[in-house]
Length: 470
Image (cartoon, rainbow, N blue to C red; front, top):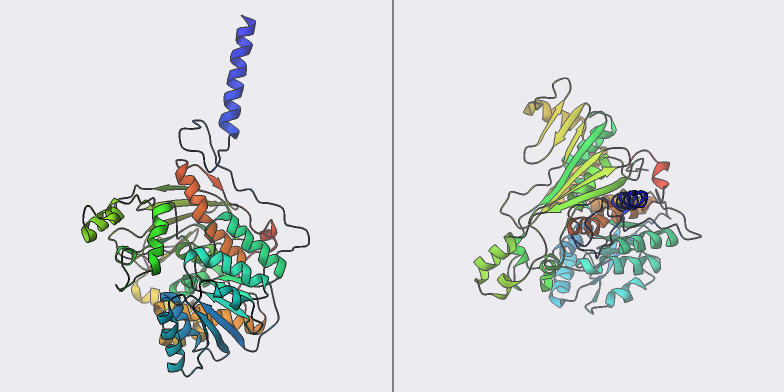
């Protein structure tokens, strides 16, 4: 009888241990382990010997910033035009595997009164460009798979890097970016233009001046119907070269493009400048929209209609920070919905939101939106100093209403004056890591996934995001 009791007690203890501490691997499928409470598969490795963090990194000032633009698709073409407005920029090299795209960019330079740049069309010519000694900044606008490889190689060859989003597709790539930046002491910035939109800049200023009190919760999104572009074949409007973006949705679920919604609210919450993202949970709907659209455009029996797309239509990812704040990020590019990035900040003294209705509510009347006149007055009062400085020029140049130009202007301004960039390699790593971390959570029925501390504790040395001026 006593032995039977001991056996039963041992079984109970064993089950409690399994329930409380089991951590499944990324390859484990739901059902293989019935009892688990967390998925913790991405630990923070120690910093390699001889490295130090690059928070608020300052480098040698550059009178003229010599730029190479790699990738001349939709984003690259716009970058050629915008950078040509900045006198202190010299575009010395451009590359694209499509010769017609290269020539179109050369024509843009000529139309802007700039000299033609050295042109490259080979698939690996970016390696040649990275090794030139007359280039300060690599501006990378290629497809996603090349973002991290080009950035890492460029930093290894002494170049600063600005790369289109996402900066990395995996946590391993994110760590490679961080370690390379720390070892080489080169800037690595992800080109998150939404941080520079006018409402986002104003609400950042409001948050930093305490208008909302303590921000407790924030929401962002990338809700953008891209179906016509995803399925656009060569020659059709919005075509992605080799339909590379559709191929990503065939193989990856989760929050595959979290940066637009996450970037602005991460800065409002001082992520890795006094707080950090601790863990996330993520859930996706099943996939419906891609198949339905493919059937409508190509037919029920077409190859596109028969493909197995991994990406669920709507992904919702929830993040908890070390200081107890919560973040919600949504992603949907396959539903017929109006565009939205949400951009919502909720604090102890007030609330702001951009989509679907732009509005602000403040204590002592937090139940009600500010009237339109009061809202306009408040946005003018809290206009960010950078917008005051360059906003009129940005609206003239354009690029998503001007935010693209502010992004480029700030990048060049900081490089010229040897200032820390507004966004650093840790922003790039953290925001991009959500892609893989959310995928793992989705595959494990929404289980929590720890978010690595890419600063390795240095986030506690700062207390706010700073956009530096001389």
